[in-house]
Length: 121
Image 1: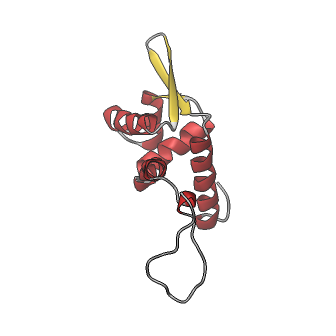
Image 2: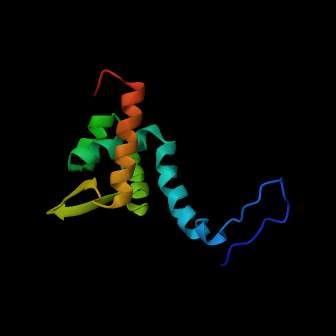
C-alpha cells in the first residue's frame, strides 16, 4: 500500500507507510507467545525445558505439581510451538523447540530473571 496521510493532522508533516504496520495474523502469533508468559508454572516448566529434556513425571516432581497439571501446561506450550516431544518406548520426553520464537522467549525470561534476581540463578 502506498504512503498515505492520516486523516487528522496534528501539525506533523509526515506520511506513514501502512505497509510497515505488522499484519494482524503476525501480531496474533506474538500475542499467542506472550500468553505463555501469563502463568508462573508454565514459565517455570518452559525454563526447565530450555535447559533439560525431561518427562512429565520428573517435571511434575521438579515443579511440585500433579502430572495432569504439568501435561496441561505442556500441551499449551506445544500448541504454541515452543516445545517439542519425542517418544522413547512408553516415555515421552519434552524440550524447548529450536525455533526463533522459543529462543527469543527463553532469552526474554533469562533477561527478566537477571533484573529481578541480580545475584544470578
